[in-house]
Amino acid sequence: MAEPLFGRLALIGIGLIGSSIAHAARQNGLVKEIVVQTRSQKTLDRARELGLGNAYTLDPAEAADGADLVIACVPVGASEQVAKAIGPVLKPGAIVSDVGSVKTSVVKQMGNYLPADVHFVPAHPIAGTEHSGPDAGFAELFQSRWCILTPPEGTDPKAVEKLAAFWRGIGANVEVMSAEHHDLVLAITSHIPHLIAYNIVGTAADMEESVRAEVIKFSASGFRDFTRIAASDPTMWRDIFLHNKDAVLEMLGRFTEDLTALQRAIRRGDGNTLFDLFTRTRAIRRGIVEMGQDTSEADFGRRHGTGTPAGE
Amino acid sequence: MAEPLFGRLALIGIGLIGSSIAHAARQNGLVKEIVVQTRSQKTLDRARELGLGNAYTLDPAEAADGADLVIACVPVGASEQVAKAIGPVLKPGAIVSDVGSVKTSVVKQMGNYLPADVHFVPAHPIAGTEHSGPDAGFAELFQSRWCILTPPEGTDPKAVEKLAAFWRGIGANVEVMSAEHHDLVLAITSHIPHLIAYNIVGTAADMEESVRAEVIKFSASGFRDFTRIAASDPTMWRDIFLHNKDAVLEMLGRFTEDLTALQRAIRRGDGNTLFDLFTRTRAIRRGIVEMGQDTSEADFGRRHGTGTPAGE
Image 1 (cartoon, each protein chain N blue to C red):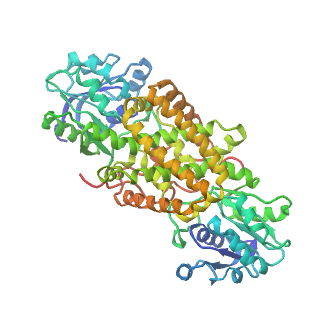
Image 2: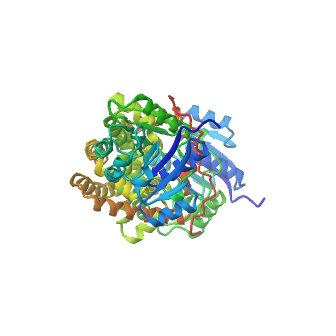
Image 3: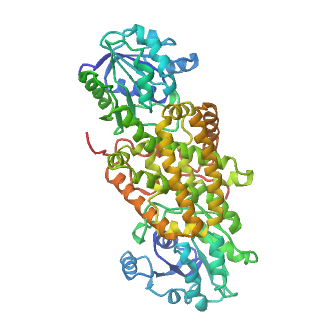
């Protein structure tokens, strides 16, 4: 195996993403050692049991001290306090990164607290599952997924390339863009879909009891896919909406405008408007399947006949 | 193999559902022969090439003549004309059914045209893929899926049980309820999720070109699952919204009311409201996974590393 890219990796936060990075970095021989930090003693003990690192601490500064790569794997809203804690101890030349789903806010929160002699390269791996915590991580999470880097203007290209090599080393495809552009694209591809999924599952949860039980029972008809999205980590998603407010509200405005037009078409029995939209949306799906971003297998390739519905 | 349940099965319409019934009924020895009818010569020829039936015709009356079980596998809006065409030739004691996603409207459309000496048992198998047409069908489509029967009051229980046995014979779990209750439950579990998915994919399609390409590229972040839903058959779905208008508009009203409250919480930076909702929705997801209606495997158990994203 080649020389590792980095000596010491410090993971600040060890949830789904942090623990997956730990597994993947070790499996691919990308770092010499990993220091794991998290705020809760219970989570830290669990990370130790799982053998995710070489050293463990509750103190972010202790973890970052002497690290060559520090990755903040925390909810977006906690970025500032991480930067504040680690700023004073960072080694000159170290790379500081994160995994947040919002980038403009992270740049704003962390930028001021990082010394001029470290390289700040924010990152967002587009990968996740509905599970959270150190037990949820696995080495293949980033395989063939995108990781978007949003280095502020003036960042050393060599540092950007080194972090890109790290992400490629754990299986991701790397893309570089501005933080602002990232936040706009992710608002429509990720943040609004999550908001809508949370919302419809909430609407269903508020229905009278007799209907609610059946919503679960007959969820395979479409609702089910929304519930998976709506089971994502609450803290992470609260922070995303609070920190990408402008782009989310802008896209939400477009969405509700379009939805109102659809509602009107249904009320008026205007089948042509409905048919035209439903035909247009198929083209987008074809684009996604052709680009290899999804399988066209029935039911996502879920195995048929393995579910055991209740009743009957 | 036991004696088939039915002698002759007539399939009026041979799209995804009709062709899947053909495969499944034959594979499980549930009928002696199958007559396939469809309005288009091209589709009929294709059904013949695929060997889906024992006889083929463009005329619904010819197909229904002498059949013991007739299943209309057509978009909901075409139900009336099917009943009109087959009503006069139906054999006394025959069972007439359908597979429509809306039931009150189908009962209204077909009821008047069916003679008193046949049994009318509307049905809705909750199963589908994003593909349409006779080539899309496969025998396992209904395996462990629900099929809801909505017999009008006064229907002979023996006829209901016989159709239930047919659906169980091709792998489905059968449930009986009123047409009205069905339409309300499906509005929230299926029709609104589809409407929202179509809507957000439409909103994305209307974005400026530079963003649109990236929406496809980074679709794995949530949007992708909506595009699959929004790739469903346009005619089928137009008819569903036109024919389940009242329940859909009622549920859409609740949905947008809730969404407006969420929008307000984001604008005001009210993290607690967001966090509370995001926590509540997790419970619904747990219910679905516990009832065996979905896998909790990461990414629906999609195989990692098999996609081939463009670029890089």
